Length: 283
Image (cartoon, rainbow, N blue to C red):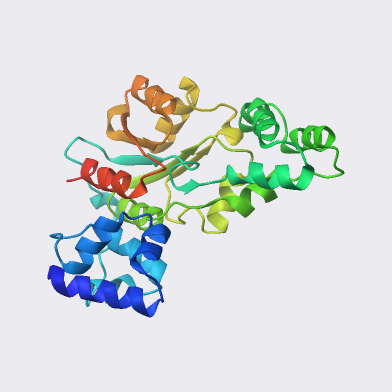
């Protein structure tokens, strides 16, 4: 890879998009020093995930930035999927806090529209979220309680949620790369139907998942042992060949107890987190 030529292409793409370095860093969740070094050609073989994120923000095809005349990675048939150096063959991604983020902003929006403090909104959500995630209570039941408590006629948590959640920068490219070389799935604590809607809206990458385990659909949630048993059965591989990528330490601990491998995803630093995912899946 010609790092200097790549840096010039990235710089040109940024300028054509009308972005300063600081603005691009903010939109792409990059540090200023990293972007400056990439544009100078001072970083040897910049991460493809980083370049892909810049491509997404600037609206330039990744192939153009990389100056490839062919696809980034050839298609890998199912029977030729990879095994990482650590033995991983199947990767489960968490959703909230990993592939998607910032739904907490919905609490502020609700507070502004109802006049209830953010602290009360968040406390109520946390009180009922577990029941909704396990389908111990229907979505409509919880929403009716919220409507009554907030003194409004109607309350739709899914709308607030979807209005405020967004794809984690770089997650689309990461998920596509992983699904190209490994079997992939989703393992998420979420209200009934929310994960399907996230995929439909392409907030969560729409790749060929072998398994999607939404807590509300299976009646249990992380870190309960049962959900890992269900997920392993759907993955169809031994426990030690599964990697869970998640932002919650307790959920990772549950995976490790089940015999899985685990990797913590830092929602506040997706760039380094994606790099660690790539490192963990070297083959």
